[in-house]
Length: 185
Image (cartoon, rainbow, N blue to C red; front, top):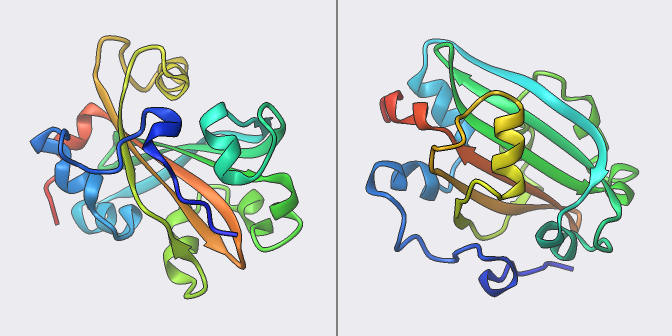
């Protein structure tokens, strides 16, 4: 069953009207962020920060079809472009989906998830949503704990569901201030 993300559920925006101009093309691009960064950088890398079982947040649980505060598989990585940390990526999938079509995500290591998502013709992407993250948002707190951003910085994020054989996987990408130094491809 496909779930339609609803802005009213969580504070996420369905439309990019209020996005900062400097980030609009990054946030609204429907293609692979991995591919775009690789085109812009002479050196691209993925560094895992946290992988394993964790509690899904309230606004992640419903779209993933799991009860609030139940365990899910979470993968958090940073994406680097020419030795600059530009994106904090947070992916969540229900444990039951790991025994099915999304089983390979637990073995990605430093491989970009985007390569898996955009190179598999059976994977379908849902709509993008956007949000300005306050200092108290769990993803902003996690990015700070990881030492990749400052508490005073405004962060913007986008998220979407990817479906494989009807099983959803949620990807949230938090754009860090250094994304502004990356030349657009």
